[in-house]
Length: 143
Image (cartoon, rainbow, N blue to C red; front, side):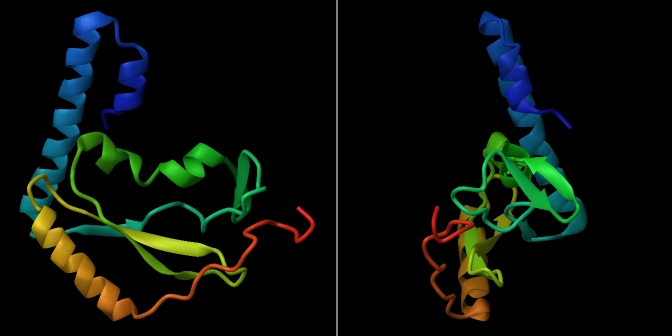
């Protein structure tokens, strides 16, 4: 998979920018190809690898038995679609036992914005009302 942020980090003038834009186009093409081949309207997946971490969780987040860097735990799932510039509405999906929010993302090929919004509205209706997250969103009340 082509990863745009690394390409941008190595960008050297116009050639680097062209390579970055080509990577973005390639990722978008992969989304479109997958959608056409599989016949799906959207890819639905958890927005993040973990539920929303508490505000004072620090730069490492626990995911099961693994400690992950915050940026991996939170951005890994959303980066490809955002990098490709494809539509990807994110919907609240509920709360953890600790009262922190979880969400789902629906990614589709370029140009599927209206269809994804309609699908998102259907998912929102199916999920029903979602409680507000509990405050203060911290690991401990004294934080």
